[in-house]
View 1 (cartoon, helix red, strand yellow):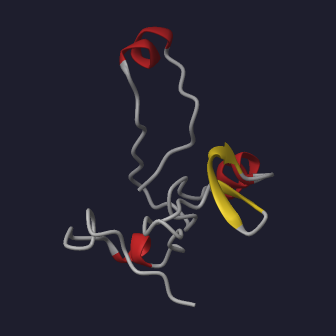
View 2 (tube, rainbow, N blue to C red):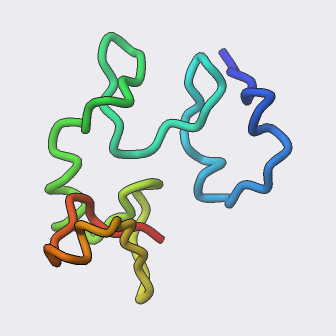
View 3 (cartoon, rainbow, N blue to C red):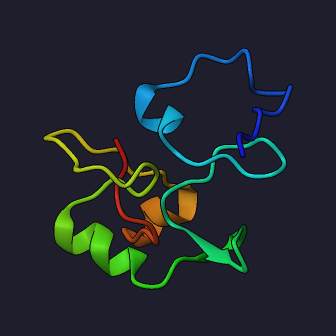
Length: 91
């Protein structure tokens, strides 16, 4: 069964790493870290073991592929003040 991309994103340029991700029933790419419950992605939940895998294997939090030399950390103002983040890096 092939799920079509949501009309809101189908025309946006998409990196190949993201194109390899599964697509939800609503037509959005499902990030690597998302938990699948009853064969459906639950975007509110981190998949079991994903945090440890990402850190230990140096995997991208979004696509799940190995990271290179350069990494991106999404942060907000409190992350900068506290010098702490809650997510592993991405491409």
